[in-house]
Image (cartoon, rainbow, N blue to C red; front, side, top):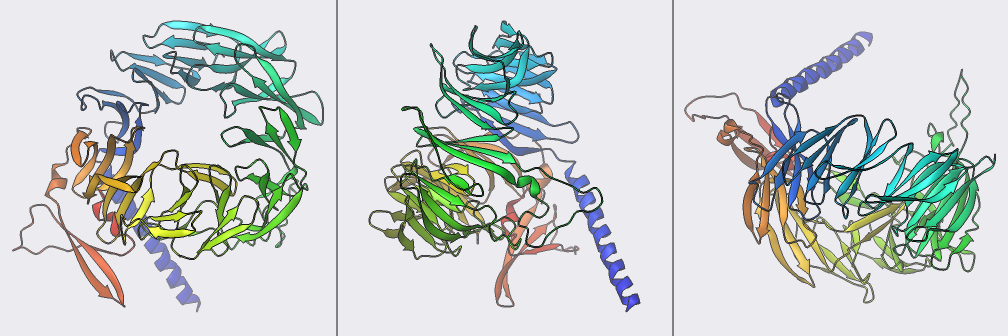
Length: 608
């Protein structure tokens, strides 16, 4: 028995080492080729696109492509994370280095020792915070407009017209409002400022202060503008983590305060209890929780009186809230804790309605089944939410926790509420489905029968187990994917009418971007014989090559591929047969065949 065990271990070790060498060989082979990555960023008007080119030989870089003149103007900058300043400039950051490229003149400015940067679109300017804690503002020509010293590493901006920052002056902390070349002090405190951020409304500034009190810190809401004023001051537990969840576009806010539990570690031994739902994850525990609902217009603050061990998530309603005991019943069978014994809390009546255990719904991925990321999906008007008790069927609830109906059809995946919250659209592996809430009727839209449908332009805003999932417009962009043929297309639908924006293609579409009006579309496409290439679709089904990164791979164009379909053990399978370049049918070749089922989508992968 000992000899057999040694043999198995040797074989396993051999296989692991062999596979690792094979992977290294493939990596070295792929490294010879340059390619475009799926890092694609567009300017606000979609007149410019930034795309990263990967090349181990020449180094990675970012290209800026002008879509308005069909890539007649293209710039190249260092590999960086980029942010556009309107259509006139772009900032790129790599570590503490920042570059600014003037997209009109092509002038490039280089800066070093930069901590952070900010853009002001309406001012057509940008600010750089340096290691010496000086904040300097520049216009697109590079002219310095303003300099402020002794700035902390705390700032908040709407990216349009105003930056708020914290600085020290005469032993006090100040909040300064900067608009273009103008700046003024709008708040001053003896306390150290821990954090500043903007609420849903850009004129509401949230300030977290560390006080000298051993038990409390302070949360201050500031109404900015011509006359800045404090509109709320709230004592919070010491070192609490504060979270703001906007309800109904900022008509009210759910404010949560959480204090992390102290961890006591024995230097010699750590004991894990089998019934502990926080095994090896005690850093996720909180010793204190507090919740409030705040109405800015009435400046009314109300504490939500739930027990200390209860967590609250927003369902986009200022009266009803999702409550639960964190990790209740978590037995580590699932990778993440499930939502068990959930309730809806009624703030007005101070009562609870049980909705039971909630399961994540399954969805079909391109390779294997997956799970949706949230347990509860909420409408934008805060009147409805969806949940599943078996991970298969959806139940529709009123915001008060009363079950409206069970949608009996299985296979319905990501739900998206319509702009007016009167419809729910469901992605699925078999067409796109429309559920009319008030009629309780479900029907297929028949835009892709037997095909996998995804909605590309919906909004998703998360708050723990819940997510606001909705369309901000009365039209939506649908991705239609044929898993059997590995073919993809896109349709734009509005008021039950639709048209094809991108025709069915066998190319792999890595990235799809579009303008706000959804009239211009850009794709990053590749295939087994086509390096990643940027295309534009300006009109219906009219495809134009926009940018290929000057990548020349003549060998890829010579590769031929055939897909063979067959059955084995009662299952339909397929295999990809690749022919070498300059294939001669009279000669004999060693044959390498990729036989696949769940990997069928890789047939159009470049350098696969």
